[in-house]
Amino acid sequence: MLSKSHAKWFFLLGTAGFSVAFLGMTVDSMAQVPTRSNEAAMTDSVVRGKHIWDKNNCMGCHTLLGEGAYYAPELTKVHTRRGPEWMRTFLRDPNAMFPGERKMVAYKFDEEQITDLIAFFKWIGEIDTNDFPPKPDLAPAPPSAPIQGGGRLASAPATFKTICVACHSVDGKGGKVGPALDAVATRFDEARLEAWLADPQSVKPGTAMPNLKLTPEVRKELVTWLLAK
Image 1: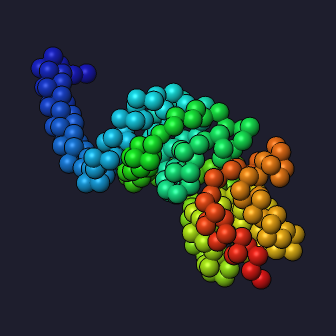
Image 2: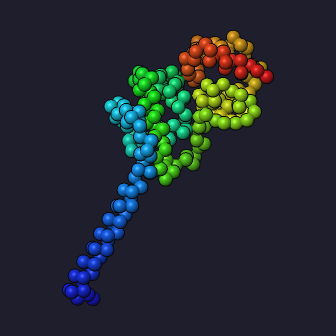
Image 3: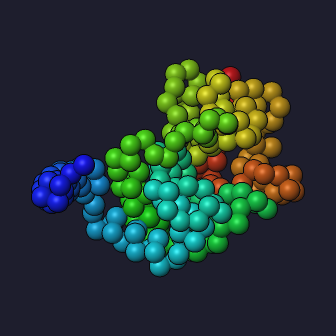
């Protein structure tokens, strides 16, 4: 049993020791903040994107770094998972991308605001989060966009490799939401494909295929590639 004198010194030395350890850990943590927080990549566009995120209360549905609501997808790594072109198309008109399914509000962001939001998501996705969020262990993760690959996918138009590949696959690479498109030329002719890409709902009402509002030039490029043997 400690005497009063020993107990006093035990308390004082213990307090001093733990205080020094705490201060040392604090200094070390603060020294790592610029690197771990990706501070060097925090541009004006990133800051504007963060203001847009806050102003529209996006955290009321989504989460970032595990903080926020869990009604809508976690977005910490969305830039890596989906890619900037897919994100831009989605943010222009969320409901068109997933007709009858998505609940996201169409905020009608202009192109500059969308660019700032994408910059913000890219910045936050490059923060050192010790591998957070974890990869799903019950279902395969959606494919990242763009997907790199050889064979026919290598010659695909940029639109396919950055947007379409999130749902469709070629040569076994890509999403599984929509049908594989390896042999689409045996099922559709040029006019049918053009109609699908121009307005999927007019061809098949209720289809999950979104209207990406592609330009005639992009549609022609995709149709030509899809029909090539």
